[in-house]
Length: 354
Image (cartoon, rainbow, N blue to C red; front, top):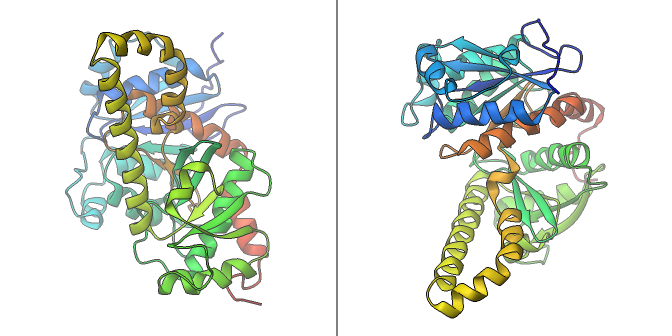
């Protein structure tokens, strides 16, 4: 059954959540952005979508689909921010780009969230400048979910702050804990810091400085250091690090996963015996592949903003776009931004060791 159309533009209206989608951002735009938006509408009756971009191109893509037209509106945007453009300059000059228009919709409350596969740099800059940081937030991290044998782990940060300070890692832990508890339903989430060993005295200068601060921080369940090989086994629920290391972990994770899947497929089709055996194990393998497919978990929210901005991979296909849109529903319903603001408001110098 289709949802009742809101009739109002933007923001939460009754049970409806309005999501702005950057239709021109990403390697596969606008095709995959449009398809993902349509599939999200089919899966959820709680959302209405504002699809931003060049109307002619978006309308051409939409012709392929049947969808609830009362819940999807095209918002014209004549410019596109390319990945290689300097982020600050692009945000300043291209005010009629799909990304900037979407960020402004979040800022003014016309949209509850923005989903983009566009320039990471421009999204980070624009998110902080246009959507605005929550009072007390020093750095806004990108926080993707990565699959493990036990479920998922939230990786904070994966690409926003390569020069983070120890006090920033404490805030990452606090915001990540709030996200995991309220969006994923993980009670008292375990927080770990990525390190080269389990001993407290190990690590670089940043890890050594951050460890005692995390240990002393009330309100988080800090379990200590986590080595990289422990991540796929679900050693913790929230993994904190600065963005350089986080980005390396994320991309290596994805690369190894794709390489293993490719090698398994090659082995299965290399001989008659392999093909027969492959047919027998195919149902089980499908479940494993799906579990470790990053596209199943949507995009990475930019934590610490007043509004919700979700950044998906530039190479995202329709499924990842759809899941990025759908994850916005729980984020808004659970009022994550408000809970982060309350946490920071109530704390008294959480970054200092007792």
